[in-house]
Length: 316
Ligand SMILES: Cc1cc2nc3c(=O)[nH]c(=O)nc-3n(C[C@H](O)[C@H](O)[C@H](O)COP(=O)(O)O)c2cc1C
Image (cartoon, rainbow, N blue to C red; front, side):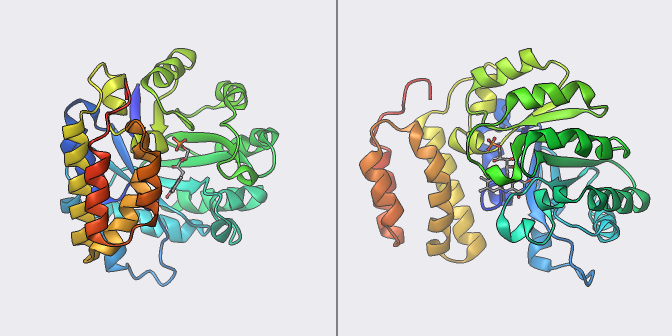
């Protein structure tokens, strides 16, 4: 079974992808790292800063899959051509993002409101782009029953892999991923299918593999930020040690400080990582509150040093 790192805006950028492979790569790297979405520019002029994220020289190691958030199929196909010119093979299309600012424009899972638009979008992409194009989707807008009709549209196109996050748009990230709806949809899928949603432990990964042996992959987002050794553990390796977590978080902090040119900006990015990862440490509630409030680099360093005096939770 292949394990993929989910695209997560604000988390799975190039600094994280490289740092994750440096510290956990030997046995714990993702088989593929999906990059957070980029939107193809309407004037077809590439934005240097955005493209720097995908520069091949900044992304050595395991394959990176760029992801596009778009609603104009021809424009997306043009962007796919640009990414192919950089050496990327697979490109992923985002039909899952539930953020209001995205769905209001009819993008992400907002496109699932109008299946004629999904059809026209995919037609535009597949009639103008070559090579593997995968899709990441939710089950629908309001209720999972919508997925049958959505899948009927997807089945018209040579989608290289369909990643299904079994929530609907309205749900955002509330409730639980609907495994029953996923199980019902899977036999009707004609393309390779990847499961995504609410996986946080190696045992859960193994249980999914057993329940759905036909899956081509399992994609993990928040669970991998919370436990960067998750894939290593699933492959029979050791949990993260304190030294590894220390090295990983220090490299992330320095990497972001260099990328943003400011430790203050790096701290706000690090707070995102800590939001998930602090649960590796036992008894961190008080320090978690301090971490949320602090602003200065020296405060950050003091609180992080204190967190590292705490024991790791067992079987972290
Ligand atoms: C902060 C955040 C940013 C995300 N950014 C993206 C994104 O850029 N593209 C995308 O397809 N999904 C994005 N997602 C959704 C994740 O890829 C994934 O589908 C979701 O978190 C469920 O998987 P998980 O339970 O393993 O985290 C994002 C999710 C979060 C929480």
